[in-house]
Length: 212
Image (cartoon, rainbow, N blue to C red; front, top):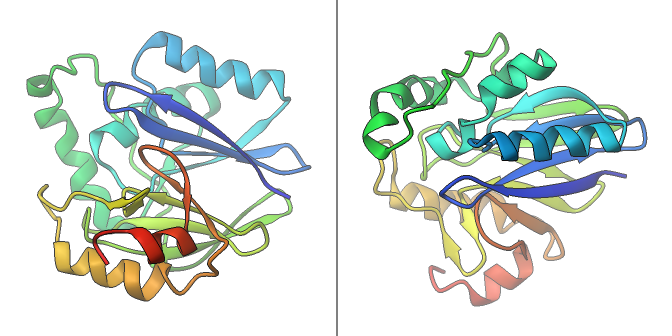
């Protein structure tokens, strides 16, 4: 069974997730640590729980989701993995970080391994399904655990809302379509852990989300 730990980091209140199972192998998803105190929080949790980081995943590569990529690489030797369509998004970060006030952005390493649009990724005794759901960003991936009924959704679906589509590579119609066709077909009890804000469920959003 997968345990999920949520941290909320940086000026954008971005949700960073650590997933681990009984083997203590763990996955770091969307590391948003910018300040040293945030970096310390993450490493302390990993150390206190005796975890072994084996994967670094990005749902997508907007600045608030990749702040900590370099730190994770330096600390645990892990390069990020994401869909290749997000590479230009990652490569654009250094050009706009300073004008947004993030003068200490540390350049993220680029992947050795890119994730496909469909398939699975495994760690410990656990498996996550890849769900390709662009619209907020050009090649956004969600990570779904069929066994434990949850979705790490990034900036696709939020509690009572959806990801913004006014950034480069965004597409409102595409996002709506992907949520309808790929997320709303998941079981109602599926818990959604988004990139910002509180968790929700597929069933709740199907019934109450004002965008649908």
